Length: 468
Image 1 (cartoon, rainbow, N blue to C red):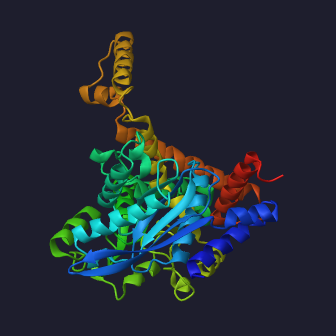
Image 2 (tube, rainbow, N blue to C red):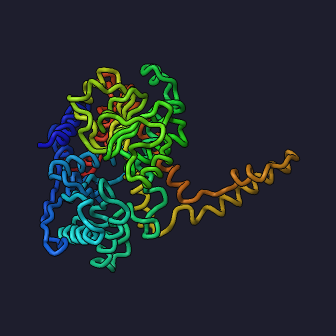
Image 3 (cartoon, rainbow, N blue to C red):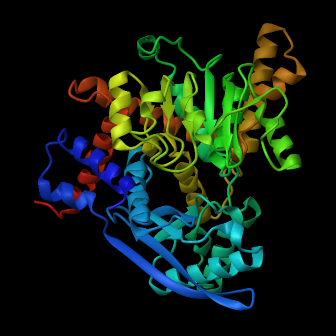
């Protein structure tokens, strides 16, 4: 059993003690229901390569099951099961009506051409279709490490080829390009969700006092490990909308530091031009990529892979708040140590739930066959315009052109998606924090989040009549 899966199950067991639920019911919630392991041949160059891949469906208390597909050389069954398990709890925490699932293809995307990756993705999709492991009401994949909207478009096209008569076929996968049945705001969703989680957590003055910090995000220092999709959007949105100062960044090629702050947009342009973040003007090179985890800062955002903070480096971590943007970046041992030290840890199953939340919005859009905002935007615009006119008539004063535009503009799809995501993250945090404050025996947000998820899932099983 991998350390990652062990950590997930240890956290589950720790929280289960606080629920008072039947042992058999707890076991059903904990175990993974289905795992499909496959091997298939794909032509690479002039030769054929056998690809190993997986799809795990952890829980069917809600359908469809939902979870990303990752392309990584490190993919194995235990990792996929652990990620599927986290997805179940994640969906429950943010009240998204899915069971958890996850897929993995054991390849490094860097080793293949675009055409070869397309062949692998399409063949993997065919295997899922054969075993009924994909479908709008069955199992809905999404992007994950090593995949993106391009791969999701290939999956959709393959599914449409085989299931062309299904009117809801577009809902078989989320994270698609916007022009291919996707949704505005999906690309930034996970990173923006991390930002909203941090914003809400830092808004409680009492909690911040315990950490010897002021309330709010403005002026807080942040270190980010990983500038992929999640890390990039977390960093840039925190910087632009939260007033956070990014002082350290780590990527595949190394890590950099600047006490004066690093402009993420400029850094990304530099990296695109030079092929590396190293040497970015005004920064110092750090000895190791992992040194970013031990930088003296207010907020640490591990946005790379699992098991980054372990017993080997946990004593060097100085951050007061850790936002788990990646899945499982802290081992159970490291988490336990840092909690005793007084560190606030925003758990992955809550913190990075922005992706599945907006995936849910995309799924709903595909099932409704209509863009969000299409019906109401102009109506709202006219209504707000009439209200402004009324205020002007009653007061005898004129509202400026810019102010009028700001007040009367109706909501676009991106506005509604961001609003829905922020509402989801705020509501979920209040619920988790409320559990922690009410139950004196629960002293950390992760355990409170697990208790929240377990209670919701158990309620589903009990309502279904499976348990007496």
